[in-house]
Structure formats: C-alpha cells, structure tokens
Amino acid sequence: MNPDSFTNPNNFFSAVQLLVGGQITGPNNGPISEYTFHEDQTPPTEEAIQAKLKELQAEYDAKQYQRDRIYPPIGEQLDEIYHNGIDEWKITIKKVKDAHPKPE
Image (cartoon, rainbow, N blue to C red; front, side, top):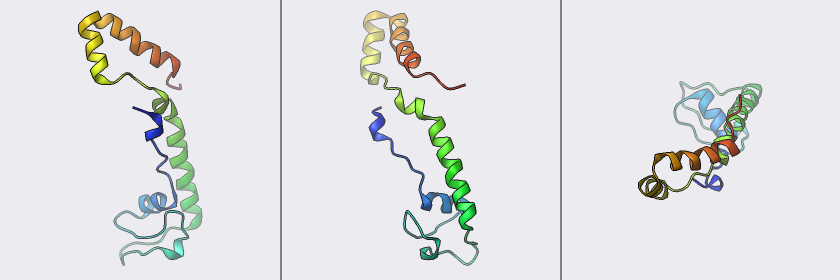
C-alpha cells in the first residue's frame, strides 16, 4: 500500500469524540465551544483534549514503520511464489522488512 494513502487521523474532533463517546458534531480543529453534545455527554476540558491528542500522535508515530513498508501488490507476490517458489518470495518480503524494521 502506498504510504501517501495514509493520513494522520488525529485531530481535535477525533480526540473529543474518543473522550466523550457517541455522536458529536463540531469542527475538526475546535474550539470546544462550537461542539454539540447530547445531554448524557460531558464536554472534556481543553487539558484532557490536548493530552488525548498527544496520546493519539504517539500511537500514530509508533506505527510509522508500517506506513513506510511498501510491499509488492498481492498479485505480483503470488506470481513470484508460483514462478520462483516461497523461498524467493520470503527474500523479497524480508528486504522490505529489513529496510523498515519494527521499533523495539
């Protein structure tokens, strides 16, 4: 998969939605005063939102290696297995994994 197809889903709205749960409406980048909440929802504080944004960004950053790994399309992988065997396919995949290792 092309890493350009991945976008960072972390924004003010996603942080608020994760903190509150359920349906909300509001702009992607705040402010909280422009959000509509249901009566059973309590708007989060700005501090809670910023903490959640940092947490979400840390999770996103920790998976950068996954977005950097560009494997051949599955059709090409299957063709390689058919024509060259599983061992050659493993070499191809290992090259991608070695170029973008999983952080420890």
